[in-house]
Amino acid sequence: MDPQAFEELMMTVLVGGLVLFMAFIVWDLAKKSKAGRFGTMILFLALGLGVLGFVIKTVVIAGMEGV
Image (cartoon, rainbow, N blue to C red; front, side):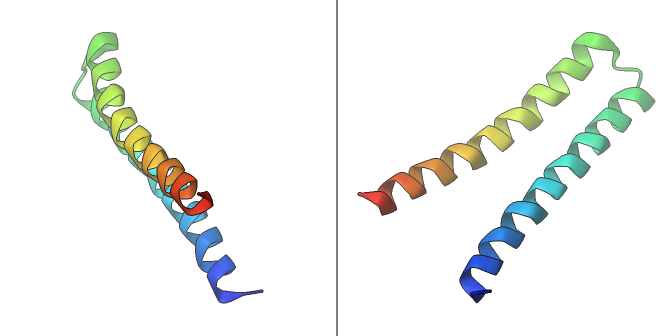
């Protein structure tokens, strides 16, 4: 396997794992702090915006490389 392809695959897998771990941490934080439904939604919205920014950055870079 080409090292560049391996690095790209591992970045995708490991960043995805990190995002899932962060989601678990936010869920646990919301549960322990008794944030309720609205508070939990706000916590996950903040995490979701960060993940969305990462995805948009990846898509924009891929689009620029294709041009």
